Image (cartoon, rainbow, N blue to C red; front, side, top):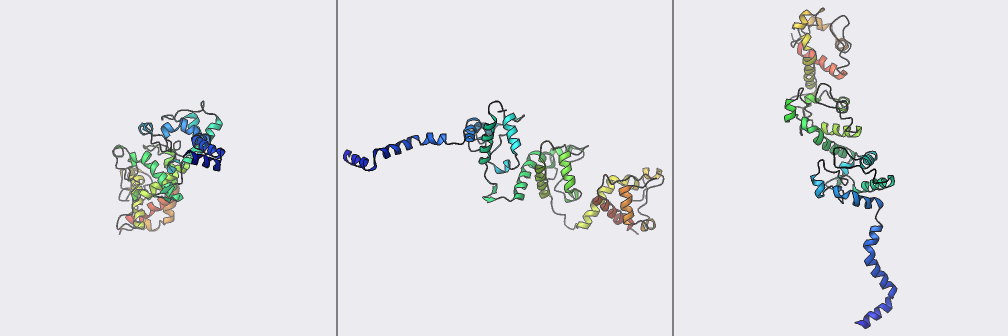
Length: 328
């Protein structure tokens, strides 16, 4: 046996054999020295909570509330900007277990760490199929909605939660196509960003970025159910117009449109009687729209153009014609 080894060594050379042995022995050391600076920092300072793979699936990560961010989740990372990551590392995240590292890491080290964190998240996919931009936005919106909005508006968008039942006014039911008919994208964006004074809907401008608000809007739109059977787009417009009329117009013009209300009887000049067919025949839709939008100087009819948008005014006009003026 010794003869064969001596012969083999003489053929391959002692230097080659020694090099191979050293390579096997020192491979782990060499691999460690070749790791990126960001990975070294991450494994040392971050993996305890966020996990080696970035899924925050560590024993401590599972019990922390809120749970540490999952850097390997491409959906969770989709809307996280470099500025947000930098600030979170440097200054920490109040209300969470994420402490400030600004005094422990230098600026270059924070940059190395950010570079490595970005590498942990792969492309967003669904069952192995890459997500489109719209699908990613929808999933981001769903997660935000489930976390921040469902408590009042309900997971399915029916506003049937315990909190919703005691709130006045009740939160909007996003699944109801009649309630949502008036809510264009501008109104929906403003409600999320600025809140709704006089309701429990607070402003989210400091908690959501503009892109995240759009993500939530996209998901809210997906909750809306089809129109009920037998309801057409035209009849929906009249129904919505009726809802607006009862809320804003009936105190003066009356639920029946005849201005026979306590307030209507004392106003001078008296509010228009929408059931007067002769009077309404000479009152065009264009004139009605102008009266609602701009008001009628010298009367109690105030301008509603700042409260109702043009579509709403058209809906009220259609309702008045359908409910009162068309009756014999």
